[in-house]
Image: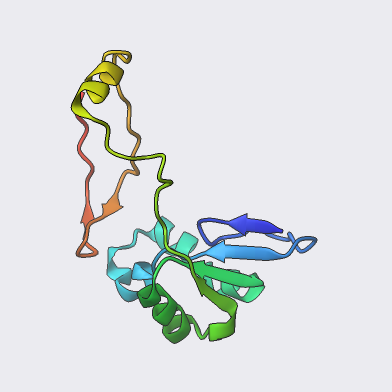
Length: 128
């Protein structure tokens, strides 16, 4: 089985059953915020859902959007919440400070453009 966590499975992979994850469909609801390149990428969604044997979505809202906007039968969709492993939990202050002293820097990579909570595109800010 092949799982594509960003909904676009590789082309011509039919030796395996295919499961895709659709995190949201804002690119279909707010297409005006897409660049030309993003529109080409996200334009593969119809083919991806047709080729997928099953689809994972993180919420009931995304499940309903997938049914309504892409015509996917309910039987091919499972809602599986996205959550961190319990291993990832807040540390006590003293433990956090001890861990922070081990590292000299922290690097976080973000996409050039990210969607804000309202669906609008925002530029990430770099702090060095």
